[in-house]
Length: 412
Ligand SMILES: [Zn+2]
Image 1 (cartoon, rainbow, N blue to C red):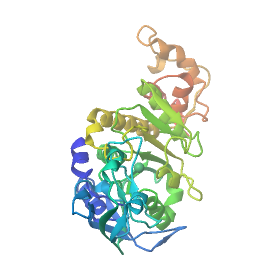
Image 2 (cartoon, rainbow, N blue to C red):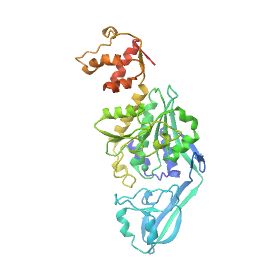
Image 3 (cartoon, rainbow, N blue to C red):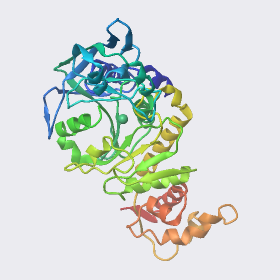
Image 4 (cartoon, helix red, strand yellow):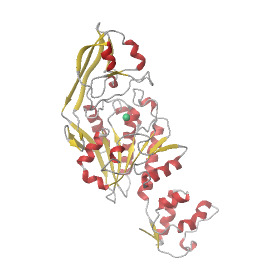
């Protein structure tokens, strides 16, 4: 995962741009993403697809020709979607358009004005004092033209038509954790699910943040009723505990399974309700008229967020692997869960069916057998039973499957 991240993170992946398209095309070589194109100007509910933005050159010089800042040194030096400008400006005017992050003085901040239309540069806060002259020559050679917003859409068909959507955004230029880390974990999860039989149908969706999800869902409205749950992945490579943000509904099956899996993965994680941890594409999937319960898993916050310090130096493969394993476990529980309904009366003659559990080898399961048998009324799923009794899902699933094999329970 980290190799792929290192290959793509530095690209100028603005929301509709050649750099974004290049990254998406490269990912489509690994997983056959279908590329959905939505034209500039297309009305998508209350939004409109923006123009493709390109910047060829951008710099600030003093009038003696000393170059103080050049976008060729770092993509973040120019405001994403900056208007073009070629002018001599006063110190005061320049400072109005020079963005810094005082909390991270040594880093270039990530700033964007996709819809407001302004010009601007971004610079390390500690370098502000270098801009002490009265006048500066500035150039931003950028252009806005008609293009296509692109969404990567890959589907793995399962037995059921109900869809679980995994979503990540790909539109943060020259940053690694936000957002390439979520993308590489998503791609690896797709590779894993391709190798196995799945109950649900899985969709892997790569978008430019917010507008990409709005564009995708508004152009594929017939898909919305089939979307059972969503899972937004981002910021998974930094050294912090996991943060679960629950869906707008708050306590759906995917919320409960995520909480359960995180609890069991240990050692710790944090949890917050919808919009209290992060705000990404899950806002669109959970949003009005869409209403797909969509959780977010990240390792937010981290101090390098939205700056040039968000680079591969803060990413560890171990963290990516840990997050990938966590999501795969969550999907495993979701995918294998079912509601057992009993066909028997009275406590089952356990040894007669090979269902007896020796208390010397497994005391917790031995002690839980009667409680388990009381929960086969067609109301609770295997996960509900494991969760209620504080037991391991895999163990309970194996055990309940034996009841099923003996015809003692059926799936309802
Ligand atoms: Zn971001």
